[in-house]
Image (cartoon, rainbow, N blue to C red; front, side, top):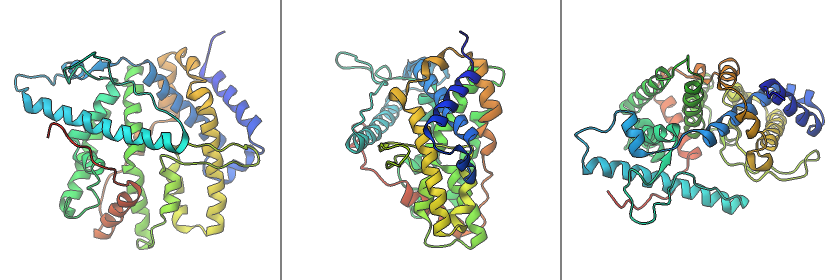
Length: 359
């Protein structure tokens, strides 16, 4: 039997219908049933890419991207080595926190078993998306400042530099977009996957959208952090409910196409009305997690592997074109900049720094 995305979507809908007591209730929130299905499909497209994409060493990626030159020297090697050490350090911390809170163990697919001392450029195999994210952390200064928990500090990033970092970030994302071959479905999948990862890991556009909305209310304080967390929290324990009597130990709200629809609500809704919306957000996260994490998150992967790249790319273009969600960063005043700093200070907590061997 031929597998189609339409058939997969119908199967997912039947699961939702069997689980949730009243799908019409979701219409009282900002996320519809169709939005949930779009989200799950997008996340499975990304899982399929991560599992099936070619993995290469850093040396191979650098060669393919024309980055190996006669100027390569020990300093170049040290820089990439530091990037890998730093990325692995924070990955290990996240994995330890996940294991401690949920009992879920992440298997690292990036390291090769080299059987002894290994050349740093050949010791890790990465997908093209993972390699470019690694280099973006080094080359895009805004991501580097966020990654190092310095963006919230005026002494580390004065206001003029703060503005320039966002201008440079826009150029980096535009360059990523321009590097996508719109006639190649595999390019659309890979580049959009990379942008998706950057968006939910760093929350640049979400946080900017919040600061732009805060202008209308004269930057209200205290900042509604708990409400914002419901839109971007990366690790969330979702408690049992009558219709699903199991706690979901790890869940993500990565509704990139629709999460900004709640921005006005975080400033305007009463506590009672927000509590109702939060219940719907919680139900949405439950439903996405149940379908997305079935059989360890791989239940639908074999079916997505049978889809043509053209069908997956068409879905992205028609249903999940997050490239249109980018903001033009215009900083109205110092209060807006400080609001942005405060969001990163509180919602991107600092983690212990690695002990760099090659610094």
